[in-house]
Image (cartoon, rainbow, N blue to C red):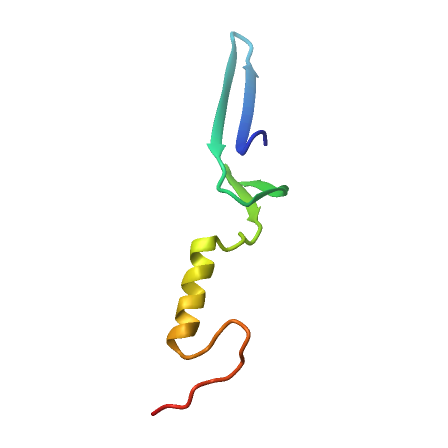
Length: 92
């Protein structure tokens, strides 16, 4: 992982020989993926099973933005609460 990008590289080679001939096959690939904000580069795991590569990337909990914080405060005020109160309004 480098600068928010995960790069996966793989190569394989196969050699088969018989009495009359020999064959050699080779393949490689490189793929890069942009990771979302909050991706934890210390929490990346990969497994390879039955020709399927599975990569898991842990995400940290993003901090709420100022806009989300203001929206949450507005919702509290709608219900007659403020950010410093635990008073629950009674239904009318």
